[in-house]
Image (cartoon, rainbow, N blue to C red; front, side, top):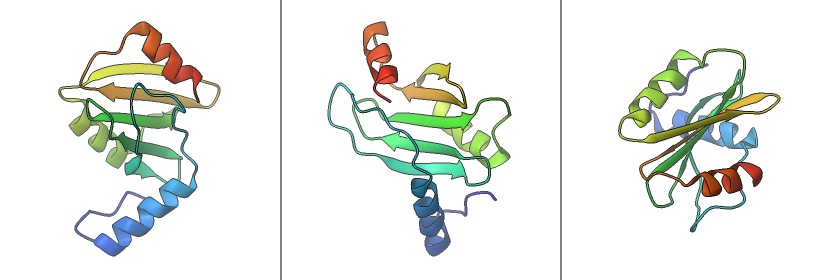
Length: 116
C-alpha cells in the first residue's frame, strides 16, 4: 500500500505512525545530535525512509535486500538522491542506503554502520 499524499494529513500521519511501529533501525552514534522523522516507506515490504536532521540533511533508507523498492518508495528515493552522497551496504535481511549532503569519512561511516 503506497504512502498517502501529505495533502491527506490524517491518512499520511496514520501511515507514518504505522511505519514508525515497524521499528526501523537508526544508528546509535552520529557525529552530532540526531532527531528521526519518517518521510516514506511501505508497510507491506517493511521499507522505511527516515530523515535524520543532522548536519547535511541526511536520510537513511531500509529496503528489502533482494527486491526492488515499491514504486512510491523508489520515487521518494529518486527525489532525495539528487545532490546527496550515497553510501550503501546490506546485512542478512535489509539493504541500507545513507544519503548525506556532506561526504563522510570511512571511519565515520563504519562507526555509524556498527552502531545499529
